Image (cartoon, rainbow, N blue to C red; front, top):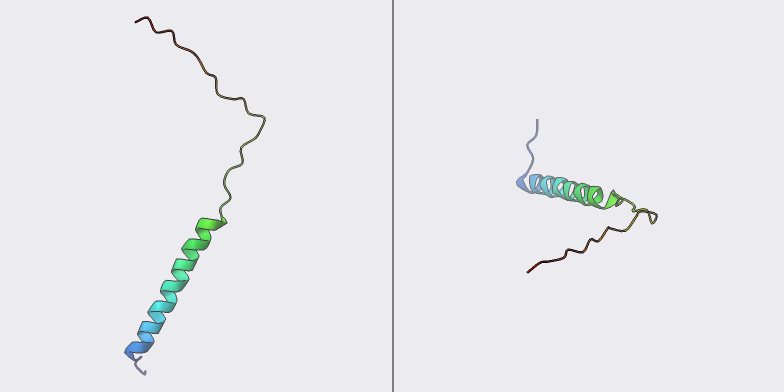
Length: 52
């Protein structure tokens, strides 16, 4: 079985690293953020009466 030259190993390593990084980037950007509905109630604001 023939052996691979060191440059071929380097090319193979760079190739797989680029595929791995692109896979991570695609997984990051493919997810859609959760949609917030406009019909939700606004937050209840309560005023506090300080006694000092």
